[in-house]
Length: 112
Length: 115
Image (tube, rainbow over all chains, first blue to last red; front, side, top):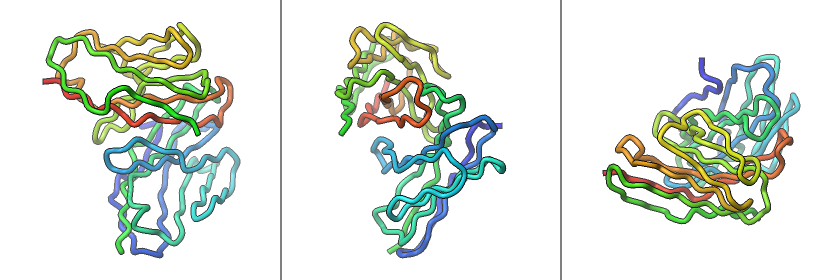
């Protein structure tokens, strides 16, 4: 079983819709969770992180964490074509900076 | 803003060559990392360092070594490049060794092709 799993997609949504990206993780002791966006040919950039159960909002982005079910999701409201990218979920297992595990990413396409 | 700079954007090397990939960060971060990224495999950790002259193996250290002589600089060395080391190499840094919500800041990446 992989440490972090994501649906590779591609996920296609129309412009203005809500895009929902999901991620599950295997270790119940995981402590913090990150979402990165990666445009084609570019390096990942941090969108947001979450470490408490519930929702965390930042502009059009909402991260949702459910530790009991071991999943974390990212919602993108009012999706724009510029949101088209691969979204990487990363999970920190033991609280140290060197214990970060990445999923393989979900490719999102926002259709104008 | 944190800046992580990788010395080369594209590199083409021959099989058997010794290859150096350089990375410099300007935010006095303690932790530095080298990843490689391949389609379908995602990001895989090669080596990381949480202090000067300290290094730890990641998930795929074979065929690689690293050097951290100064806090701001972390070098990845391919002792004898092979074609299966053709990949995108990403350097990253983060600020606090013990902080569980310290995010990674990535460089622009080096696309290495070994022929």
